[in-house]
Length: 329
Image (cartoon, rainbow, N blue to C red; front, side):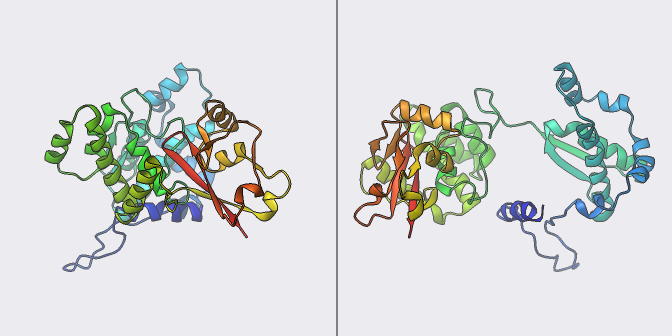
């Protein structure tokens, strides 16, 4: 849990200042990261039910749309999930008590839980609390952001390289570019309006701007030079820089005998979502080793692929996605 909290904090620190005080009053003015374990771990179940369970009615909980939809679909709805609404409401109450938090932000799917928190604050403390939700972001074809065929888009560089993050935005559909520029960049609206005028192949220029701006916000502008160089070399056929590509490592021992199957390597590099997906990639001719098609599903990477002192090889999935396998000696 501590590791997860540190990972979340490292991402938010790119966008929020977690240190500082008001020079005039000395009061804390910037963001703080708290852990609800500070108050949940000390709760005693029977006391919690007595003091706070009585503030909720099943009738009210069943009235929320998210609950109705689950019941209408006859989807399993565990007692644990049902209690999550109470715990999230209690979190809001404790944040008010400890930090005077009066506004909770969240996705529209959290509306019921958040409203329960405002009601609990009113009943227990007479506090006027507020909830503000934003609709879940979908692409033009109705899919939820992050629910792509390639899985969720990680914000941590150790889970998703800067290059792959950039490519995610670069591959935005034409219909979504302008909307995403408004949502995920800090470009002035008049600049976005100019990009909106681009048509045909020129709309790719707007996609590059989107990818650059979104990536710079998360990973810093410094990584863009290397990303652009990698993209340019990949499409020009020149010897490419691989510094910004995702990378995994193999040992001499791994390469002995039959080596390592390409299905496993594509999966580890996250160039495929499963071995089945990797097989389809090979069957379709989209899987390549150093620019050469991998013809057989059973093909393996061996010591021979690292001949003449070579220490790394590049695997490609289609035209735009690639990763590096590096030999550790």
